[in-house]
Image (cartoon, rainbow, N blue to C red; front, side, top):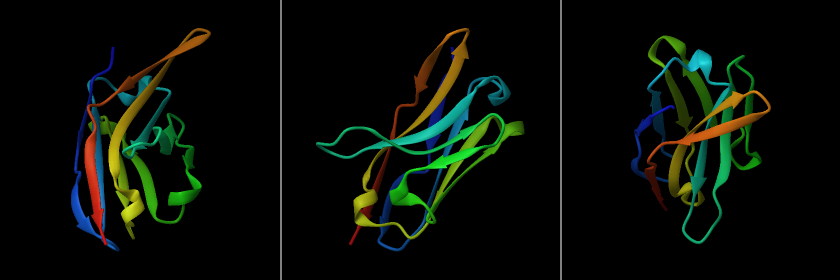
Length: 119
């Protein structure tokens, strides 16, 4: 079982920056991958960025060059640095932890944090 606590959302003007944090209740060495997803009103939840235990990263095309995912193993924390924010980045952002168990996996989710970008 993994509990995830997010922080760092808020209201920002277009072009501004925010940093989201997600702290896990256990060592992230034992978590195969962590990521950030977002869900805007009326839309499906989508992957924003992910990072594996080995440090490999993956980004949605819409955020490449603007967002950076990173991890601090000592703090069991994953960060999402968001720069050059756009109104279309407005959404609830969710932290995700994926733990592989044998042939399957379990996804754990944080409670979500609201990011609002004004034009």
